[in-house]
Amino acid sequence: MTAVAAPPRPGEAGTAPPRRRKTGLRAVPPVVWAFLLIPALVEVGMVFWPAVNSFYLSLTEWNGLGAAQPVGLDNFRDLFSDDIFLGALKNNVIWAVGFGGLSVLGGLALALALNRPRRGVGLYRSAIYLPMVFSLAVTGLFWRVQYQPDGTINTLLGAVGLESVERQWLADPHTALYAVLIAAVWRQVGYVMVLYLAGLKGTDPTLDDAAAVDGASAWQRFRFVTWPQLRGVNTVVFAVTVIDSLRTFDIVWAMTQGGPYHSSELLSTYMFQQGFTFLNLGYASAIAVVIFALALIFIITYLVRATKEEVA
Amino acid sequence: MATASIRKRRRGWGFHAVMAPLTLLWVAPMVFVLVLAFRSFDDIAARGTAAWPVSLSLDGFREALGRGTMGRALWTSVQVTVPAVLLSLLLASWAAYALSRFAIPGRRAILLVMLAGNLLPPQILLIPVSRVMESLGIYDTLVALVAIHVGFGLGFYTFVLHGFMRSIPGELSEAARMDGAGPVQIYARIIMPLCRPSLAALGALATTWIFNDLIWSITVLRTEAKLPVTAALLNLQGGYVSNWNVVAAASVIAAVPTAIVFFAFQRHFVSGLLMGSNK
Image (tube, rainbow over all chains, first blue to last red):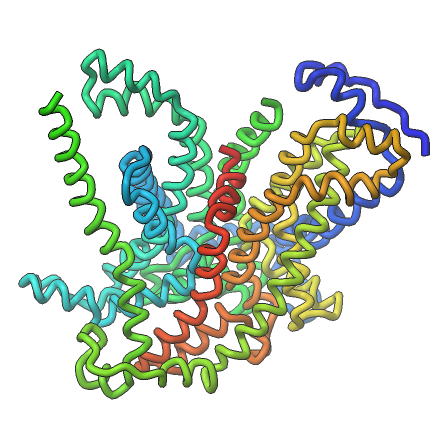
């Protein structure tokens, strides 16, 4: 088989030494097209084609039988007068802020504490990221047990004389969402910590030492020396957490199914109920489109970041 | 000098004084569920879930694995996870090889579009995916579950493997080509063996993701007897409302396999997570 070296493309001259480009990338043999097309077609069939269909379905009314009736933007109009949807949207904002904020604060603090090698650090790190390997459903059940009326949390509160605070955490509309949130943060902190530990590894320790010699306090060193160097990680953590919080489904489904009285309903759980319990497929697709629209900007952030890595 | 070292030591104590209790607090929920799983129903009924155990029993596990169907569900999960992980990595390595070693027009755009597919919220796919499976005639089969796991994960695995393959020097495949090796041989004999570390990391990560999945299995499966571990666990919870030892035992059963993957591949696992963030 004769392969011809690909001509270097003008826009990319700076991305790699020209020698590599000449020898590494060459005209495409048919078998290589097959290598690309088979996976690409699988992804198109399982992801992109369905996604396009959701947009179409969101403009229809359909119960899964017969043909979908086009109704224009009615579903979206209905959404904004649907109190349960608006409640779910509000809960999703609370979720994104609470889940994102707490796991970033916790993860960053732990990463800073466990950054330098010393005795016991490995053990502490493992313990903190262990929950991350459990499924969200398992995490949900672990915490459901703790939140029982006679569970550990109420028992501990009783033991320190706070009986008045005791309650049925998951059955109380005022606390259900936050009770689920705590469980989700418990699992997420380890992940964020891993990301920040890697980010800290990329910072320049001599800068920190120099600042220390100059008499900067620990807080000043963090704020003015370390933090600016973590910009890249922050972008990734931010995008990942928001995308994750818009996807959140399993843990709520396992702990409360959105109840009581929709008090812990998120967009994803409401969408699932509408689609798979009530078979309002058009309406559920409209909710899915809203979730997509909210996620889009963060997906783009992540992709832009990924592109930069590709070029670098 | 002396005061500095004393201060250092004192700081060391302070560090452990904070971290040790915090770590204990972190693992407490797991330990608690583990203990609960080994208690007997009568003990829990009489003294509450939070009490110290007076006796240990395996009833919870026996019930969860038997009538609670966790045993069958575990086997189902294995049947889904193993082919899904292997197929995902195989197809992703093909795409990554094509995109990283050949002058495919618009290859960067293709790569990013593939990655974007993995970042989509699954909600936008659920209803159409269940329809696609129906029209393919595989709705409510494990084949459908494997297919959607492979399709949805591909973009991410391709992106990560592409990054790794790009870093393999072109001279290696060039030398093989001079010796008369075709693109398939270069892929199989040179590129794939060199990718072993990142394949291991991705494999560990993909195993936990697919094993832990809930939403896809309740989307493409209807028959209760076919549900994998996570979905079966939620069903069991509905059936054993106040049998906390059974529920706890079942969640331990669902948690153990991924915990084993984690401890066995801890290094790979962490590096896999970092690939996801591309630092």
